[in-house]
Image (cartoon, rainbow, N blue to C red; front, side, top):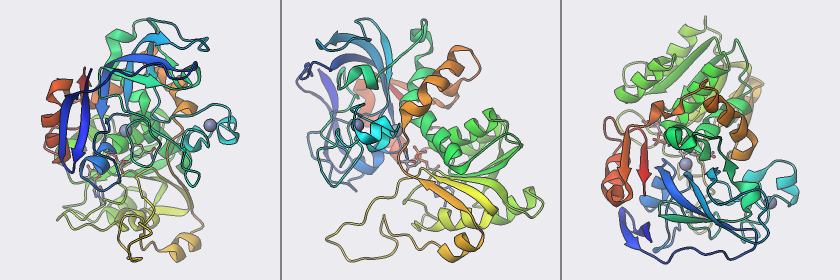
Length: 379
Ligand code: NAD
Ligand code: ZN
Ligand code: ZN
C-alpha cells in the first residue's frame, strides 16, 4: 500500500510499504478514506522528536472496516469508523477510569503512559496516512459512525483528535454556559476550543493569534478575534471583561509559542493566560509541552521547561488542567451533534487532497501558509 513515510527532518515521501495485517484477535483493519494532517505531526516532521525514519504518520483517521480478528464482536466489515488518536487497551487501571490518554498497556515503555498512531514516544503503532490501518483493541477504540457518514466524512474525521482536543481544553478549564473564555492560538485546536465554547453557550469567546485568515475563522464561528501583533492581548481581554479577566482560558499553542516577530518564547501563552484569566478562574492546557531531554542541560525555554509565574498563578487561586485528550470520553456525544446537524466541524477544512499530494501538503501546512488551516488527505 501507499503511505506517508518519515525519512528525516522535513523529508517525507509517499512510498510503498507492506499492508498491515491482523496480528491479534482483537485487531481490525480499516481502509482509510479520510486522514488529517495535524499540528502535532509537525513536531515529528520538523525533526524535534525521536521519530524513527521509516515510520508512517497519521493519527486522525476515518475509514471502513475491511477485516476483523476472531475476538472482535461489535465491529463488522463495512462499518464506517472514526479512530481516536489514543491507542488504548480498554482494561488497564487507567482505561477503566476513562483515562484512555494514559493507557498503561498500549505504550510498551514502562516509564511512559499513553499511546497514539504514528507518533514519537507513544508506542510502536503505525499511522493512518496510508491506504490501510491496523487498529488494536478495535471494539474499544473504533467509534462506529451513523448511517450517512460517507457524506459527512470531513465532519466525522474531526472526531479522531482535533475537535475532542479543543473540547477537552474547555472541559479542563471548566467552561459552562454564560462564561467568558479566552483561547490562545487559532490553529485547528484553538478554533475547536472556541467552537466548543460557543456550543456550550459561553457569553463571550475571545481568540488570540496573529494570522488574519485564522482570526477571520474565529470571528466566523462567533468569537472576538484579538490580533496580538497589533494589540496587547492581556489588555484586550481585560477590556472585553470589564477589567476582571476571562472566567476561563485555553492554551492551544504549546512549547512553540512565539512572539509575533517569530522569537520562540515557550512561556508566553501560559503567563498571558494567568494574566488574562480572573482570580479563581480555570485554565486548560492542551498545547504540547514535552519533557526536557535528560541528556541536555536544564535550560529554561527548551521545549519542556517554561518560566511560568507560579506565584501569580497561586496568588490568583487559579486551577489548571493539562495533557493529552482522552478522545473516547467525548467522541460519541460530539458525533451525535454532527449527526443531528447541530455541529459542522468541517468548517475548518481548507484543503482536501489525495494521499499522493502529501509532500506538498506538509510543506504548505508547516509554513502556516495563508489559508492552509486543515488538510484532509483522501487515500
Ligand atoms: P498550529 O500550529 O496549527 O496552531 C498554533 C497557533 O498558535 C498558530 O496559529 C500560531 O500562530 C499560534 N501562536 C503561536 N504563538 C502564539 C502566541 N504567543 N499567542 C497566540 N497564538 C500563538 O497547531 P494546532 O494543530 O492548532 O495544535 C496546537 C497545539 O495543540 C500543538 O502543540 C499540538 O501538538 C497540540 N495538540 C494537543 C493535543 C492533546 O491531546 N493535548 C492534541 C492535538 C494537538
Ligand atoms: Zn492531531
Ligand atoms: Zn489501557
